[in-house]
Image (tube, rainbow, N blue to C red; front, side):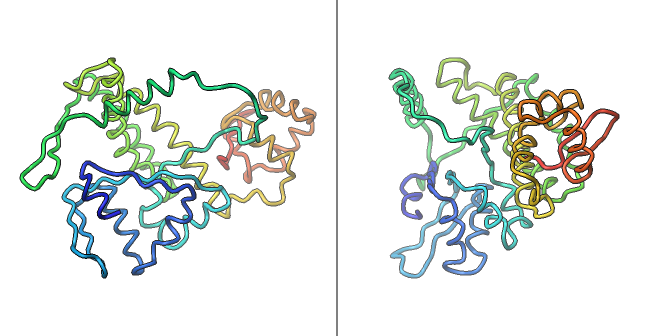
Length: 301
């Protein structure tokens, strides 16, 4: 990986089909060093590769390594072992959790050829973007500022996010919310560049449309972070709950009124009285009755 990054100093991507194989090798060379390496990479700090057996040391002035892969929900607790749920490592990971994980039937639908062709053109245009380098061959950053209205919108969102951080009692979630501010800015840039690639915007500044898109993405990843923390913490265990009730629980909105819950429960063959009993029996465990007739799920799956 060191030599690959040295050959492409703009950045590289590490794809791990099973992320477990990635983080389980963290202590392969020396305890804790691998985690600290990835913490530094997240911030784009300079990194030096100088391990035994290497022909020469490698220095990267502006590190940029993206990591993408898949992980089973049952292994999430492994990811949080050690200090990874305390030192901010887990805070830096964005999780995508599909709502419908049911196995799908085979079908004969095919992706329109123009979709893959257009996507290839978009990605190639991004790869071919011209850039300047210094005397050592390191890329020189180009600064793109925010349009005034876009900056105002981003500031308003940051103030709201700061309030959430200060109000959050869970230390892990508070840390995650804080890291989302870094991702918000990165998403703004990513969306602006993608829209420029598609001929929808310029690269003179980051506009309001890109900021709004970034805020929507952050809202999604905030939800998935909450769900992941719920899976990790044993205190949020669903052990002992019948499988049918777990399916119903997953189908319920995060916030709902009793009547709305009764309607969802009917799809699972549960009567109104049985649903009300389900709410009562699991109050404070699965549900928060924060207002008369209104409930909020405690475990976000």
